Length: 279
Image (cartoon, rainbow, N blue to C red; front, side, top):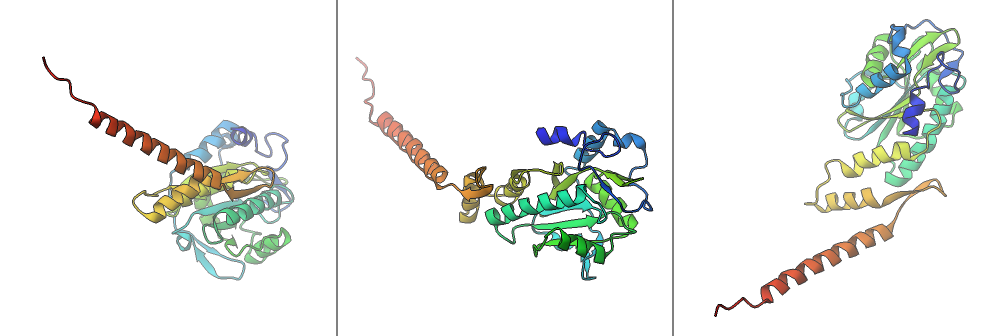
């Protein structure tokens, strides 16, 4: 709830809150939403939330090495998407560094290959593959499963609408919504994370549910194991890390045994009860 409330006010150019707009850059690119009303806090949040449930199209991008990348390449695992611009001086670096800490925590909890991450430059006149590569390096991103991508203006305009991401050019660079999007293995938007400085659980919990919870079945060993991981992988605020809490698993097992034993006792007691005899 806290981050939803923050999201409603995180728009640079509307109110002077930190982390909502970068400084520097250019203003050659047109905004994705020309209507000024789109930057009303309630309307912007509604646009962002309306994207949840939609499927992201198969757009084409270029990574830092010049290689062509398609969003369909990421199908089969959850995908985390962050739209930024490389000349941003405050908000985008902070979002990226915050996301970096959350990604590291998520990797430790669920495995290095359990999900992918992309940061996409929306300032197409400046966010070249070289600039995106330098941005990643300058902010300490070395995760092999995290790509920094560039695209043309039509691709960014289409993607931003699919993600519910609001931005517009301004005198200081861009005003934009501080947002990270989580999509499932089929490219369907499942969660929006708001703010520049969010805690790891805001990213890890949606990913944990997608990886361990969605589609898990009790009819297979893997399904049962994933359900156990879903409930027993817990966040430790003291260390800022996730851990597998065996006590929860033991408690669940003992509870199940007790309930099963009680049911067996009641069934046997009912069977042994003598039938009433008629006079």
